[in-house]
Length: 219
Image (tube, rainbow, N blue to C red; front, side, top):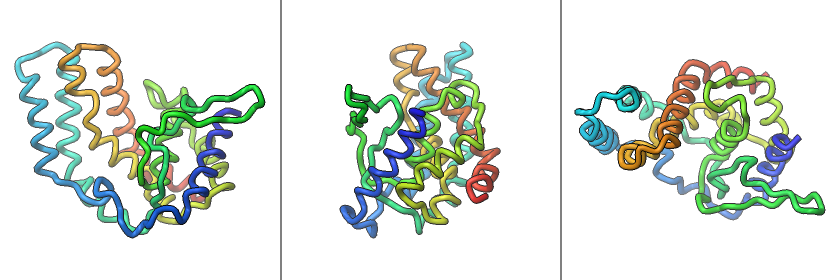
């Protein structure tokens, strides 16, 4: 199974990174939200679309207002990020970045977004980006995701905090992601609008089901 092979390989990557990075120094994105700065960006986007009334711009407006409503909640969530496992990791890991050579070996490509991130974030993010059931309408398979995480953990063990905060980490990053808004406004390309809608679907799903995901992972 390609997806389970990718989970296993991600665990091996993280295992190989232990000791390379001193995790006493966390990247600021994961521990601090500048609410005023985020609100300023979101207000700038609203200003850019305020006189446009087609359905796509209304969707963007709704997404921006949703983000604004979530900022104070995200600040509370970020205060619990102590105790997470931070390691050097790929940053954009999914099965589309895996190449199988003629000998059956797997090569991981495109490390342009690599950096020090919570490993639990890379795990859940990679699942959403790799599974067809999580594209467009989110049809999340709790059992399959649990198997994905367990396959990963055969190579690298997650802490209790990693498990308990995993869906909240992804929600945090999705809400704070700025990619897609200006890109769509300037280009009108459908792919950017599709990405905005997909992020919104994930955000709403995680808001409603984060506790259920954690409960399943702890079974």
